[in-house]
Image (cartoon, rainbow, N blue to C red; front, side, top):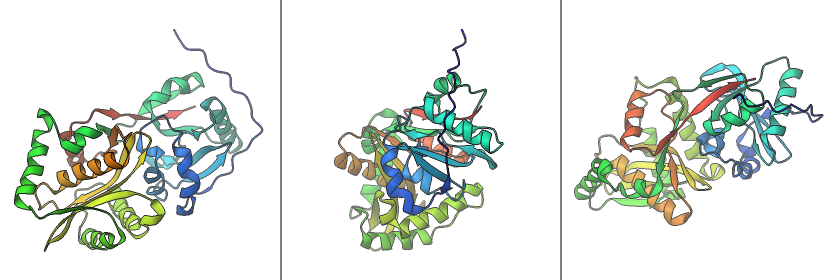
Length: 310
């Protein structure tokens, strides 16, 4: 049985988009808590670390965030994010349809969470395509903190090996003094020649986050070996019951450094945020090595995303 299409009501309100800049974080951040989804696109990191790459512009109407940018799988094709905020989709989607009609363009939404598809079909969506390289990896926070269970025994063994080899290693929350050491560590790292083009852009954005940490407002921690310095660090944000791990970098020559910082950061966030249940370690963007690494942590599930056309 085909679901009836919800009638679209023409609205007099017009959307006016402006470039999305770091100074907008304080205005946008409160609206993200409205999102019922756990995909990273509805986070400060997901929006502001990628605002230049996807050429984001935005506007806020009736406590609802509208973002115009480019399609996640084709940055030459204009697309919109799913509106998020106090306005229901039955009101915000007609506003986007009006905007697109006024500008002589089709409405395409990109990186739409799977949970929103049924409602978008009822609102008249005509084409839905899965973004196969852009699914987020979602994990249970308590398991990421301890690597408990048989399936994560290799990860647990890596942490134990790290402790045995570096008993004096220090795990510390990121402070201004530690950030200087983290910056020095990361500037010495390089992007592998086999990495996708997005890796070069991501590197520039990590450097910007480190330079403007107070603006992004992320939390994080670092692993330091006395006499050697920082060997791993991670940064992210908590929205609702989910920790979004936006940045995780390690010295791959130090066995267990990645597992160590991941476990330590999740443990720290569980202490600071008692309602935390999940960790989103974001997409692999088609990087097969990154995909294998994310799968090795045994995700609870993949958060699939789609392009939706009207």
